[in-house]
Image 1 (cartoon, rainbow, N blue to C red):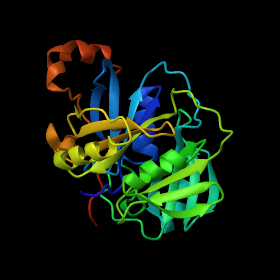
Image 2 (tube, rainbow, N blue to C red):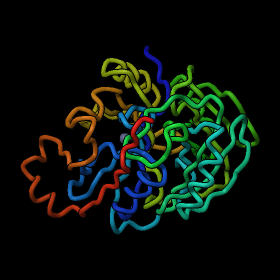
Image 3 (cartoon, rainbow, N blue to C red):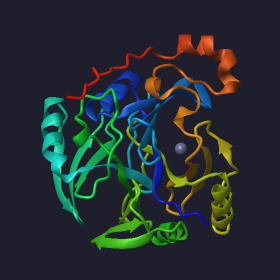
Image 4 (cartoon, protein in one colour):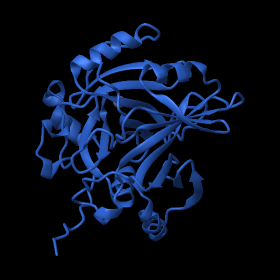
Length: 318
Ligand code: ZN
């Protein structure tokens, strides 16, 4: 079976769409790679941010619901989403966050990495993880962040669980092995060094359950190579879990299951990717709709909140 190498995307809930767009493109310097609608609720947006190419392992997606109430993160949820940056870039990020008026905390060393913690405008906890082996990057062509300091993609996520047994077993079936432990924090990684290959589980039997809402993560998706591999994993995981049938998400194909601790997991295929329906230069600039909503385009464009996309002046090579 083709291995699961790391995260494909993380999907979260936001409130104000413009504020969400501005924070992730201007403060974190991600590329706005897709502007589409929530396929289950087409009167609302679905945003995708990532590296310049929209590579798997870099994709943070949001359902921005303008009047969403603030959620509360708790047990059975992804409580932290971590991005990878070079260790030598942390001083740049401290200065950049300060200039941008974003409060952050120097969390210090966690295992072999140095961590900065901040919150997005909806209170979602974001970590910037500085480490020496940060991968190369395809930086957003429209961001103000110098390429050498740009966010590489995901480092990983942290899950909060009351009891680890079922979660650990599920991660092991998926090919993740426990590689480190510090107190109640257990780190799992798959073979290799793909982006998003660190799943930390914090155990706290007294943690209360969260409440979905703005600033909380809805689900996390892991990468599968293609449709055939997805079907093999669906079969394997169905031995112990309730896995959904394959769903067509246009830019990838998905199956979902809830791991025993309560976190919603997805397996998403690498292909076809975000270049499917628009050219690389103009990703995210216009509303993309799946074929079955095209007949409603005019009405949807009128109803959806207007957006202003900031594009930094492209730097020319010296
Ligand atoms: Zn998803």
